[in-house]
Length: 375
Image (cartoon, rainbow, N blue to C red):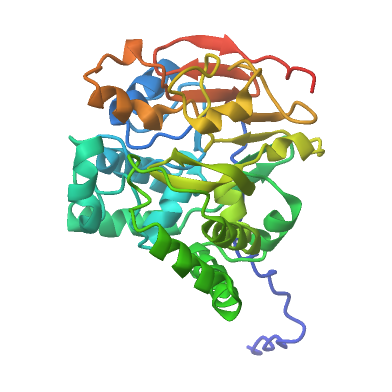
């Protein structure tokens, strides 16, 4: 029997190489439940999932999919439980998520306020504000860091976009060019470039002069500093130079006065970038400490971004941006004051149901969202 000719490699069709996944990923198809910043509030997350109709394994009888806008970790009483559950459901392909700035801190080993559950260097310092909180085991820390490092910074499909803090064309384009799993490496590269710029000019010297004149810890809310302009300039330099920082922390400008937020004195203000967002595709974000009621005494400074905007209203130039962070991460402050009943809280975990555009809270309340007020 004649032997079949060996195919010529030049003539043999080959399947096209699969595209390398990037830091801007694909949203799941079908109906979604987009969950705001969890911040380690395990009980609130369980309550919300129950009201949304999900079982313990993240399955929904109607085939819906959970999407998390980032900041799953820090400040709350049980971040390890949140990330253990999330990891199981994520690895099973039953949910999606984007990186928040708190996950970025984790994968970069940048110990910040509220991360004492993970960083030993922060544990004792955080107890005064956030205790009691569960501390992760070494195995959990390794697992959680590896999981977070595999998350994208943004997700999209034809009818919707999800990002933690800001959707802007240039940073999104940059992130599309970075491979999934390289968030830490890319972020660190931009941070070092910004640091080199600071060292090469007068900025670093002026920061040192400000530190000498104001020796107090900037995490100490009891001592209000003067407006440290060089500190603000450094933050803006790091912000504007780093596309991943813009996507995960937003757009900022120099502040007129120092203010205390997120555990430290700040010299830059968050800006409502959505008032310039002129694209047709809706965007859902977290990050901004929105309140369902109007901002009042004691509200986080960031909530002023939503002054005059009802809690169930879309916002932005075209009325197609929605912040689904209703400040669950601030529940620690109520516990510190002895308030432990979540039904009495001003701070809630919420999900935006898509395409229904319905808002569901961890209390079980459900509200239809409404159009943005006229600018």
